View 1: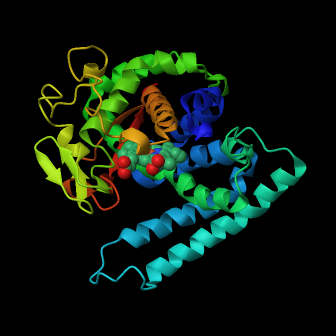
View 2: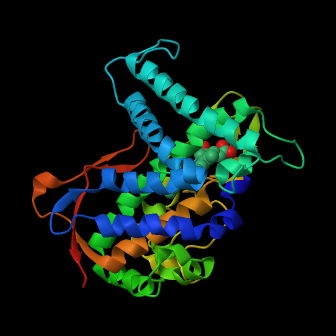
Length: 341
Ligand code: HEM
C-alpha cells in the first residue's frame, strides 16, 4: 500500500511525532496507572490522523468502537458457535463495521467530487494507480476499517511491553533518554534524520518485539502438497509458525532469553537473516504497516523516556496478566512515571 511505505511514513514524521510527545506530556505522574488504555488512545489518535488527517476527528470515535467490537469477538465464551450464528458479539461487530463505513462514505465522496483527494493515506488510496486506475468506492470502504484498527491495536500491545522494559531496565531507559534529548523541542519539525539518530531506541523497540512479538502465532493454509525440509505437507493442512519460539532459538539469536538491545546495533548478536525476525511476518503477506509501527513506537518510547523514569507497582496484587487471545498482551499492566527533571 503506497501510503504505508517507508518513504510515505518518513514524509509525515512531523505529524506522527506530536502525538507521541502529547502522550508523554499527558501521562499522570506520581501514581500507578493502567497503561494499555492510555497508550491505545494515543496511538489511535496518531494512526487515525495518519490515515485521514483533517477527517480524523470524525472517524476516531467509530474506530474506537470498532476496536471494542473486535475485542468482544475474541473474548472466550463457554460455547463455540458455528461461524454463521449471529451471536451478540458478532452482531455488535457488524453494527460497528457498518457505522464506520457510513461515517467514511461521505468523506470519500466529498474528496472525490471536490478533486481534493488529500495527501494522507486515504488520499493515496483514492488516487488512481498507474496499473489499475482508481479503486472502486466499495473496495476503499471495505479495506479501511481493518487498516484503521491495525494502526493502533497491535502497536498498543507492543507499546505495553516496551514501556514495561523501560521500567525494568533503567540503564537502557537512560540511554534512550540521552538519544531523545537531541530531538527537536517542536515535534512537528521531526524528520527522518531525527528518527535515524534514535538508533538505540529503535534497537530497543526491535528487541522487545523479538522477545514479546504481539503476533506470536501465524497461520498459513497449504494450497498444494509441499515439501518443506524433511516434511511433506498435504494440501489443506494448516501450518503454524510461532515467532515467539523462533525468536528464542539460540541458533538464530545468541543468549536468546536475554534482553539485549545492543544485539541489533552490531553484527555479533541477531543477524538480519531472512526469517530470523518474524514480528512483522515475512513474504508477500508480511506487515504492510511495519514502517509506520516502527516510527510510532520509536517516537513514543523516546518521548516517554525523555520525560520520565518508569517503575512497576510494588504491591503483588497489581500485577498484569499475559493474554494470547488476539495477540501477546500484558493486560492490566500498571506503571508509575516520575519526572526526570
Ligand atoms: C507493532 C506493530 C505491528 C505488528 C507487530 C504487526 C504484525 C503483523 C504481522 C505479523 C503480520 C502478518 C500476519 C501473517 O503473516 O499472517 C501483519 C500483517 C499486516 N499488518 Fe501489521 N503489525 C503491526 C502494525 C501494523 C500497522 C501500524 C499497520 C497499518 C496500518 C499494519 C497493517 C497490516 C496489514 C494491512 C497486514 C496484512 C498484510 C497482508 O496480508 O498482505 N500493521 N502485521
